[in-house]
Length: 310
Ligand code: NCD
Image: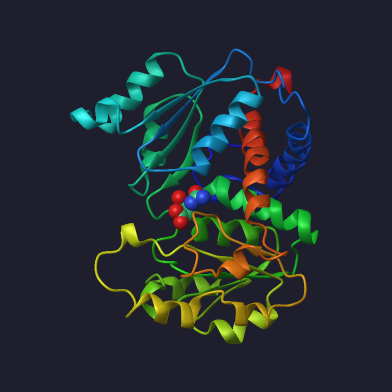
């Protein structure tokens, strides 16, 4: 594996297979009463979050702790960033304390890449602007693999606010790398400009018509409407969005029997996903959260454990 995990471009299909194998072992640890492995004992990981987060940050924190690393959480609110310190100074400061890994989330696309050029320790991108969120895509693919087996030839439909979604960008790369066919669906206003040039990629397509695509899905992933990143009207009303692009109770009826439903969270219940879908028997939302810890343990282990420990 490469030194950093900044993008799904940093991992090959073989790397992903190795990560999933480790994640499966970590998943077993999760079920134990004593959830500790010594793998990262004596190492220090810092979670540097410049944007809000519930699951990603706590997931990385738990993952690090279960591997016996010392984990420090630093958020922009309450750090010197709010006093005007630059990203570079903040990062160099925490690195100078002697950390072994940096997990970071930032509102600027490319921030993690930039930071990786300034410091010598592995950097893990926990979301950079609208660019990528590689560990989310890995945990989504891991969840799907456990449910469906090989993703080769499987049709995954990703629906929602694509323009603002780093989760979708990482997922398209990860899922197609694993052989899945991916169709992304959004209203024209939330379809990223330039996406037409991606369509040349094997196994990738776009659509504005959810009802046409849904019956052929082996799995469906709903994405949050990211109101905080929107300036202006991307759709006439929430109701209209739901009618066109929400996973409503009616649409559940056209899904293939047993097709898993994913959502990276946080969910806007009643907007992109109905309560019926979120709580359906085939909803994997909480499986994704639990897989998130195992997959992040695997990522931390592969990037931070010394060769002698592997
Ligand atoms: C996503 C994110 O922050 O990119 N959430 C997550 O990490 N689970 C998606 C979102 O905010 O909608």
